[in-house]
Amino acid sequence: MKHRISITALATVSPLGSDTHSIREAYTSKATAIQKKRFGAHEYWVAPLMETDQARLAAIRLSEAKYKNLDPSVIMALDVSRRAVAQAGWQKGDAIGINIGSSRGATQLFEQFHHEFITTGKTATLSSPTTTLGNLSSWVAHDLKSAGPEISHSITCSTALHAILNAVAWLEAGMADRFIAGGSEAPLTAFTLAQMQALKIYSRETEGYPCKAMDLDKLRNTMVLGEGAGVVALERDTENALAYITGLGWATDELEHNISISDEAVCFQKSMTMAMGDLPVSEIDAIVMHAPGTIKGDLSEYKAIQKVFGDNLPLLTTNKWKMGHTFGASGIFSLELALLMLQEQTFFGTPFDSHFTLNKPMRHVLINAVGFGGNAVTIRISK
Image: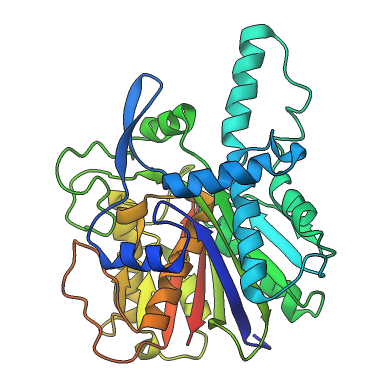
């Protein structure tokens, strides 16, 4: 990288809350935000937003007539982007690049419109424009009156970190000076949950934590879905940074089937090595793992880390046991956890592995994400 890329702001809304105090308190606690809710004829473990955050999002929806018919994923993107711009000290109308992605896109609206079509043979006038993936960044650009480029994409569960890769490329090239990058996901619908259950990866736990992400001794898959959105505000090498992006890595596994990942997650081995660059493995203090709560997903990533780091194993953690898997937005929440650990100089672990303890200053943290198809991204942030 030619420059250190500054993270000048980060704003999220998730099952852990939307303000720094609530999020920190959530990570300090051993409690999970996962709960059981009914969708259609079935009950599922899910991690929904807090009621206070849902009320704020409802107010945004009512604040402008054009927002009334937008998907929840878009409303969340408006919320976090407004707050990130305010934190960064930017103004509406500034030239700000925007790259916000999603794995599922406008899930709730798409299912609603499809049901209407199957039932009546007709669909609403706005069914097409309100379900396109471009909804995310284009509506944020409208809301911020931004003059910069606007990009939306879907690269399954590594979407948010791919957005950061893209934003860094624009900044490094000098084609933009300010960028918002992240992801938004509202997947808590009956159809989406049924899809995950059909893959036989969804949690059916009846005791303990519903999602056992990073519990390498679990005997069955325990993935749980959550909802949320988050963005970072990025600039080139400023002094007021929360932290700096100092390394990027990406790679793709060779596919055996549609959702495969190799036994030792070769894609993660490559992406982590690339993100570290010339930095010795002993300098990496912690890794926020993707760890979706599935047997193979968790174990293959752990094996990849063992391959790369050998006897210099960093502190390992994840947040999906606490807030579920938010698909395309999940990488931002992992980055948020990494940033919190750097700022607090505190390690927030999981309930399943107590041998990881912080015994030196934390300076460099890796964040991993991988999606269906084995497309891995690793980002290194530094104090």
